Image (tube, rainbow, N blue to C red; front, side):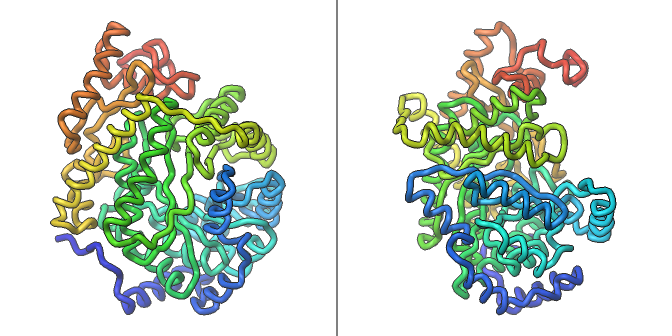
Length: 498
């Protein structure tokens, strides 16, 4: 029986859960909500995420939204200040893997080893173990606003300590956990966690503090059209808004086909606004739109190719009118990035953004219009089916939709995903559905995908199947969009390796 609903958490229940969360680790004792609200209110606009993003949008600029996080406070301050020198003031703040899984004793050991050896023994910033007072040193020493990252297990305590520390943006994307971070959790468990985080952000909003949440949706682990990712980002925004969140922003994942990526940049923010308004959340702010490198494609391992991938991401985000763009570092494929790699990677992206900033380049054609129309029809159909399954309750419908495969995506790690959907590139490199599973895609749109796949099959003289989809998956890492049969050496060679 489904227990969670699309309704605001009762205040007494929220406060009971709040005390339970803070009791997980000793640094939780430093969180006092009244004092934290006062601290947040005292921050200048230059340390408020939504204010910075609004200013960027109003000025018609585009800024970078890089990944970063290192174990020691002094190193973290130095790293963020180096980003400030590049005029980067929206700062994702990656917590380490142990923190994300509440393995906090291991975090302590990692910190001690880092201090002893001088080399990072953690792959991010241990926000919980450092605690409120130490984290405020980072907030106060840097110019900009911090947006820490977590996953389902650590989400609640990371959020509590982050907000009390003066950080005022935070992902609340339960489909991101389902896609790539939590193997066994049920959809209901993921939504419950997101509802608590949303209610915590809503508590701050009720007391005059705006904390922004970024939506990720069902992360594209594979070559696949973005309609499921868009639909699930919208679901995440509605779940958060119901709990009192007053500022959300979408992230448009780029897959390499310019016209399709530009169409997605038009489609997602329009539809998110449409559904927020439809469900009574017209007061929820969308302060900006972010472009992002698809997070789970294989990253180019050659330095030149990696710089090329960063360049494509920056150019497309600028042409698409994004307010910020998230790029990875050139050594993303090799391990924890160095400060030098951060600087060189972001300088490359900034050069591109700089030369495009004053050029009013408008790209509009029938292909972009068609891609936008197709994506819009797919998202509408998916969301209407989700609502139908829940008899109007979005949360109930979401849980049933994943169970039924109405919401589905390939290669998700979570055992509750059906994983019956498969994507492929068409002859132009755009992403299409090869297998629809149980997605409620309208029949005329299915025919459109089939026609595009058939065009590539005719051009290449072969049938496109699972193995061709695997080849396409590796394409970007090999400076291509469409894979070739000879390209699957990474898989051990030939179809037999799959």
